[in-house]
Image 1 (tube, rainbow, N blue to C red):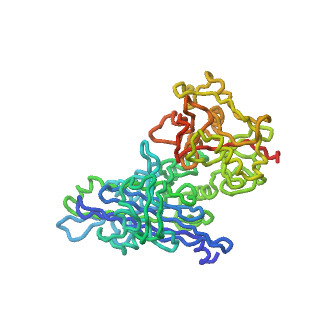
Image 2: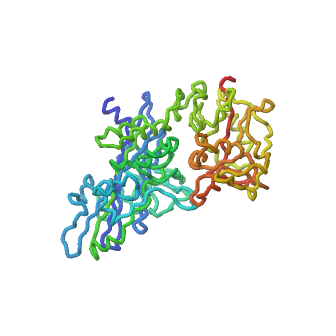
Image 3: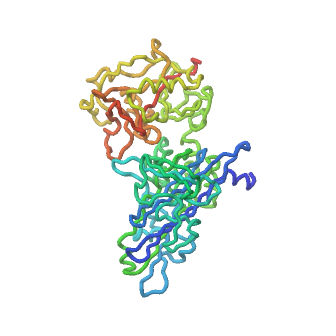
Length: 553
């Protein structure tokens, strides 16, 4: 591939975030540099592929939110790396002294790469110069708040792939916009907001007429960051995860190089969860300078590439972790295992391309424009599948309307495979107050509720080919043993950590749902939840399921 064509396929972002404190108790300044993306081309048709690093910072609260947004039309893969710099000066001294010898404020390329220990992302590696910063600066990774859903952000107005600026808000300073200043005074913001924690919320908007900030003169609505599936971790920790958990919405840090990789494809109009949520100075800095001055900075490099160009992350001349190639290949494919002749999970394919008899429970696949999760082989050529993404903001009272509407819009070849199920399920009723766990497991005892216990979805030739919602009994059957489609809670929640309705009632005016993961519901009860049948929530709704038989077409 020629250098010109290679650059057309390539996305690169570099960001510089610098925090400056002039005297103890003074103010911070924040900088960011971002090298923009270049258009991707396929068959001479220009496709907008682009991502932007968001840097939200507030010097008063020390809040700092660092994440990546995909504003383009195609998926991207992302990585970010941090490096640090600290220098101090007593009032009776003329020059600053760097914490790490041989580094200087003006040359960010020689700043000290942040390297975590192999077993703990919150502890800098002792054998690396990065460890010198442990005493003076505490970095908070990831985003997890008790009782709170994922944070909200303002999407970038700047969709110019050739513009090298970040979305830097509050006291953040974009490196280009701020002319590379390191004086803690020069302005360089390129995005609205004051950088405090939770500045943006649901239903917010901003009119960029003028324009006020770089980019289009339009009104943007707030959007929500992806909920992290798990806290950021090192490659060694990632290696110990089961294969089915290795790809998802979380950051993985290669402790050999310091690069943090988003462990999933970032789809169009998605924004990653936070890699960095705060950067706070410890009390030890006051003891070190005592009425003097210090400068502390974080330099952030980021790389964004099209998934089919992920080898650029490997071919950079650095000594990466031995399993990085496996991680990148898994991100590209959307899965960490090979289960035979079926197309890759993100590869949209015709029904005839699939061999469902070789599919592993929980396997994701994309068929005729819809993405599904394979649930089980039911025998006699029948297979149960479920829509992978939730149809949100629909109350239980719209059950039949939503399922019928979704089914009627399926591809004709898919409809031809769908098998009949009962037109009138006998669901029974499990009141919330009668919910009791079976010993040692997370699911309830159903012996006292035979209709609920026996409501297992099966082919019913007296019924109609149609979509259906799973029952409480279905969920227990598909979840109770290792190797099943819903063996852990991460597998059960919908895409984007969304909840979804079951068809089983839970008392007067309520129905059971598969609850989304919440830090304020850490126990087993959080797997099931009773909700009003009139409830409307953008974070939950329906996941239609089907029984298909390819030989029926």
